[in-house]
Image 1 (cartoon, rainbow, N blue to C red):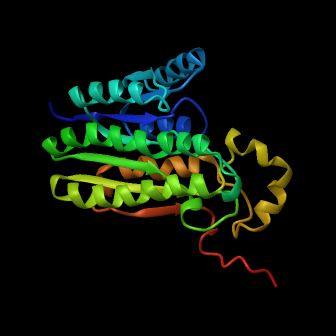
Image 2: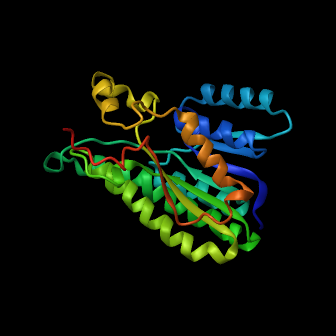
Length: 252
């Protein structure tokens, strides 16, 4: 099989940053498949809205629980038979705990969704991409993997593993026309940040730009990396964080 030059897969594309990525990629002229974990009705409405906005494009929502290894294997097998041109791994799970208090099962659950599911799906799609000598892979990482933050060990480790894996995959696939990059968003204004609402003002004060990112600002870069003009960008880790990782963080 060869990669479909018009189709992009986005995991966790039903809401939040993932939904913004789906919309941005569709606006670039791609057909889009996206996975969701629950809320089938919401996913169906999302497909309907996308088709109304882009009647010339095809959109499909796929229910996959990326925490379920057997489900990931089944989904990966289906992708190997019909690989997409582009793959954005946006699905993720947060877990905050001090290292001395970390629950192993919760840390492993975050690693499964954030990292291991990506490696299995990337393996499935990259073979078809390399045969077609064209493909785009983007992992959604986090600034948490670039800077130490108390309570973030498990989540940061899963995103750090994603970065290292993508860099190696970029080297291995570059001569076959496949690019592999990681976006490292800072704080994005989505429902994922709701638990930190009481701390938002203080958090924004520490960001040089002075605010959280809008999902569309991150999605725009993911969509760009799917395009022809991004053919020479591979193995990169691109912070989208309002200057957060450039900031020393010491206040006078």
